[in-house]
Length: 192
Image: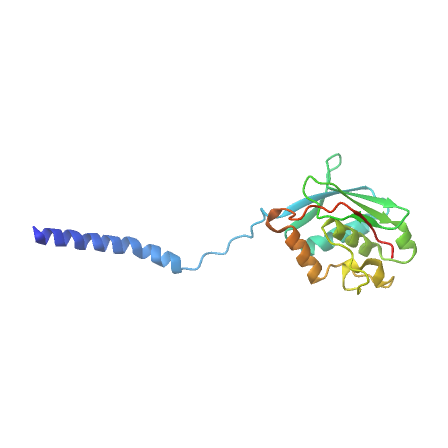
């Protein structure tokens, strides 16, 4: 009888070892590459139907942000649908609501002709004002390499791309699929 018990224990141990072996191999095998998780990307819609004359600059500003940050994307709202960001053309100085705006929230960008009349670049203005909606304050005075230095970089500055620190700050604000800090809501006027 003792011999049968030993055989039973031995066969159980072999079965356990054979069952455990594939699991151990699976742990050491590299996992296949998976597609990037896009569920955490925040989509914000903008309406530029009241920004005649600024279409190309808005397209460039949106493209600048969309190509330089990964977890928030700006898309044009379909006609008649609600947009978080309202973009309008004005005769004054550019200004925007300080965000970060959240999905379902409300922010505004006013693209002011006065800055263009004084020689400032339209693409830089549009990207800069959208940066406010994404939660970035002004960094004035500042170099041309900083998008949020705005008009303080001078009229010769054409840079419409956020620098690495500006990109990182927006990424942090929208990490995990939502804006972490509530929108400030102040309207920032970008005159010097």
